[in-house]
Image 1 (cartoon, rainbow, N blue to C red):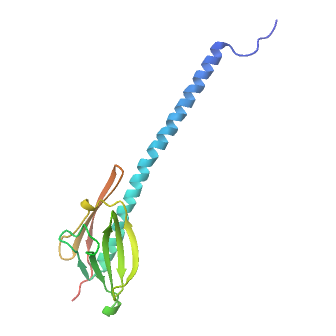
Image 2 (cartoon, rainbow, N blue to C red):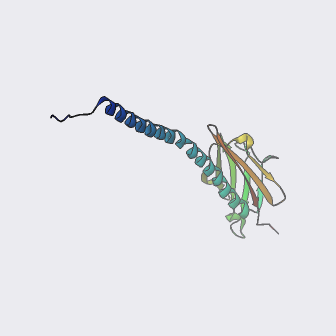
Image 3 (cartoon, one colour):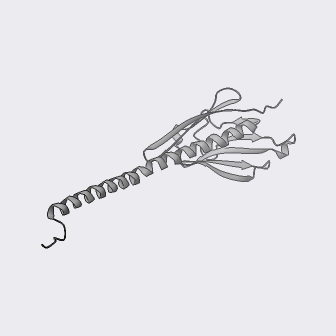
Length: 170
């Protein structure tokens, strides 16, 4: 008797069907991962932007002895009409510095000025800011509320922060 070698047509068809099912499953999984990767990344980027504003602005407000929003609603800023904060360093006014926050397009920037009015630092606070839906308002004489909205593509994040001015001049 001769031994038969090879596979039958049924075995080959069944093997190809199994391999095809595995390849299609792996392909669909990889496609899903690649398509959904962008969404969490966008949300994370936007959340980081509002957290930057929620970190920096309260620090300045806490140290300020004078907070002056430029318009009744605080925001939106226009270049040349900033929201300003005077921050005392010590008892001598010539050591104080001033900070302002302003929009440049859809970017919120912080500028720091020395007592002579020279810019000593400029910091990017947040990008992708929805200027029309971002507000800074005075709740009481020393309590402020920042509502910042950032958006990118179809994703958006809105967060509100309350900030208290701790220093007062007597």
